[in-house]
Image 1: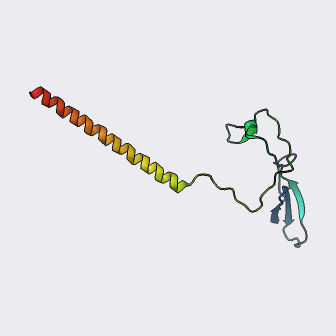
Image 2: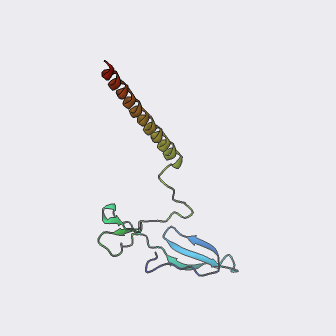
Image 3: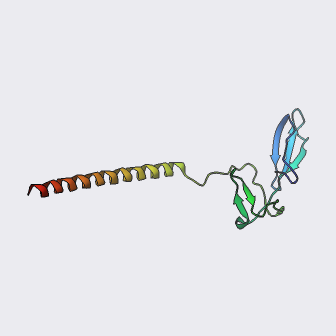
Length: 126
């Protein structure tokens, strides 16, 4: 989202740059390196976590509704990719470990049941 509305980039373009303050600049296709056009500005906000809620679509919104105000202290890290906070390999290994523990417990319950049946049959014989 931009300051006022959705951001639409003009086509065709050769290069897109996003500054730390959220300004999006483009170089149109075929233009010289000096030609840079400012297209829009990303709205940078910083509401508190206690003011936010996750909608059914997975997007975060203010609980009170409306739009959050601009925050001049927020910056964009251009060129950075936000990564997941989950290590998929570690979680897969943990899931396999839990599955094996479950299987072991099921086997132990079956063994206990067989021992109980054997004990009951011995009691009947004597």
